[in-house]
Image 1: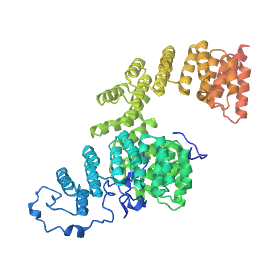
Image 2 (image 1 turned 120 degrees about the horizontal axis):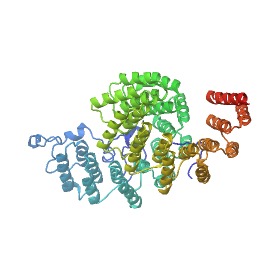
Image 3 (image 1 turned 180 degrees about the vertical axis):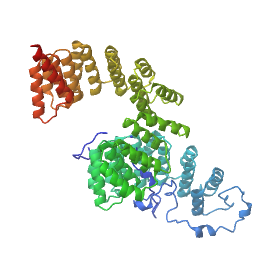
Image 4 (image 1 turned 90 degrees about the vertical axis):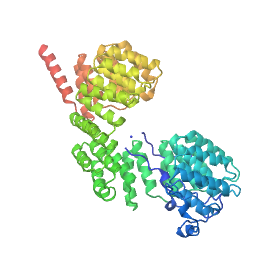
Length: 609
């Protein structure tokens, strides 16, 4: 393992800022130069690193060629076709960079082949490749690449980056392997950043670690490369390596801080994200829009309303006032913190809104139990012809389920079928949950059968839904089918089926499920333990329930309540009172329902005796 750190983490509305938004300028050197550069020279322009070495294009560069008859060029052409005896490669490279017409690009390509193929002016061909990639013509760019008599590191980097951006990651990886063995080609900082971004998209930990090792061996570390390495390990979920690398960085800019904050937010460590943000401000680094999005996401997950409000007032209003992404994160944060009025105020004040913005406010209403308001907003969204996404459908289905709006939910179901969204696991699972909440267990089962992929969440939803509706035997049948398909139950699956066994007092089936759960120690937690106590108590086996209770390292309020109610149901009133006193002795308040149940039952027994 390359790194080690004590920090650990576990795992939706922002993304880590792409490091492709910075440009590596080609330094004055030989074509195979490996000299690194600073962040100031980065851009998202794909051709920015393809100009000739030692060349700067300016107005004076082009004035030397104004003696040609411009009147003879086509009037519709944005870039004039070159004259018959075009010999200046620097000017041709400049024209390739500024070319916005496919027709003109083909003309310039012909000139390159006629005037410079024999001379092998590599940087001109590099600009030609980048021009084709900029126009979305990957096949033509590859033909130029394959026909080049000589290639340098810029050539390879352009093609690797092009394949990666076009979504052809496998071919990009193959080119990385060819580049590594090409004679005279040494990867530079831009190449490393492109390959690391490729590894991030593929979550290719093996190749990424190899590239990281080459960076360390060749002493290529700088703030840009370190940011790419951070991004890579964040995407792979290796927060130990991320923190170890971050702590060793000699220089940290806003991109590094934002990457760290976003990584913590995405992996369920909102507390660390907020702490890093405060450290960042203390060191005098000004946040940007990506920082704000990461911190707002963390504030929403941690319910840190105070910090979220401060960020809204001190940063967002000054730096990102009209940014749609930051505004969407604000809506999401206020909704998760239960401040739906503030969320709506931000939503109404936004000049621009996208699908995610609408989905966030609808999810906020659904999360806060305001299903009818969420449905109204969804209808307004449809009237304005705003396209729904998976998040919108999931949120509105949850709203319909919370108020049992069956007709509206069926309308949403029809919309998912029309837009081919039903195959999405999240949408399909939420549809099953909705129909179970509305008592439509048969329709929920049909949705399950139509899903092409069924994971543990899908199966758990249908099992818990049937158990909720009192169809315990059907729930147990679904568990059997789930295990036959090779899907491993999780703690929530076991909890649902154990409660179903308790409800029908099937002690044999309950013990069998208990034995299955023991085979996977990770599944035994406070949720499963509480369900086991409930099941054994309902089946009259209090001694087994007490044994499970005593073996639990952690107990929740539900655990205590299940144990006490189990004793009461089986006439063990003294044991129930004993557990109540023990519960209060550990500083846990007795639930009102449990307290009244015990007192009333004991009173009835006393009067009867």
